[in-house]
Every structure is written in C-alpha cells, then in structure tokens.
Image 1: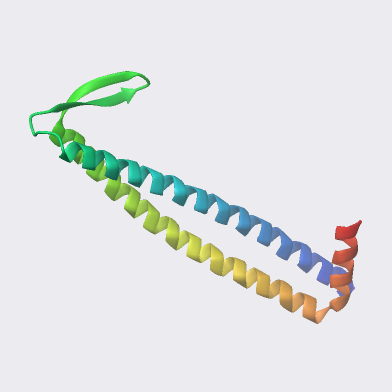
Image 2 (image 1 turned 30 degrees about the vertical axis):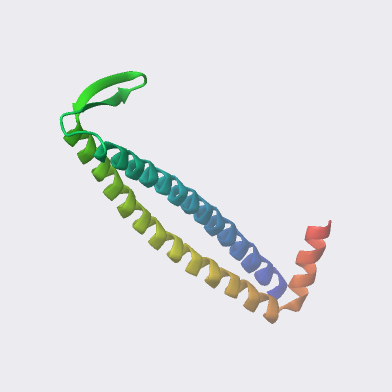
Length: 130
C-alpha cells in the first residue's frame, strides 16, 4: 500500500519536473529572442543617429511593402522597441527565477522521497533499464 503511494508520489513529482523543465526552456528561448530584438533595435538606432536629421528612411509595413518615414519617427519606434524588449526581458528573468526555484523544490521533494523509500529508487532504475 505504501509502495503504491510512493510510486504515485514519484509519478506526480516526475510530471511536475517535466512540466517545469519545459516551461523553463520556453522562457529561456523567449529571453534569447527578446535579447535579439533588443540588439537589433539598438543597432538600428545607432545607425539612424549617424544620419542627418532631414533624412527619410523606410519602414516595412508588411511583407515587402515599405513606407517612407522621418528619421525622428523611425528613431522613436526603435527606442520604444528597445524599452519594450528591456521590460520583457526583466519580466522573463523574474519568471525564470521563479521556475528555477520551483524546479529546485521539486528536486528536493524527489530527494526526500528517495531517502524515505530506497526501494523506489531500485524500481525506478529497473524501469529505466528495461
């Protein structure tokens, strides 16, 4: 009876671990994407700063459709993209820290379960070897 309860607990912990790990990988990917957006906005802004103030630039509306815009409008858009990316990155880092804490807690729960019932560790090993 206790063996079945420990097995069910293990499966629950394993499910949580898989879920949290997946979410953590997703957040890490989102952070990398936002950092790329931030870098593109920064580099574009740096290039725009080198142009004279009366220069018009192109902005893509949608696939292969462009419109001429004033330099100031383009710079404002890039500055906003930069700020938005920084805010999103900050939020994603908070989510990442939260998920890492959850993962550490789940790993600790697994360790405690294995210490309570060493027999379940043998069962897990036999399942993974089969």
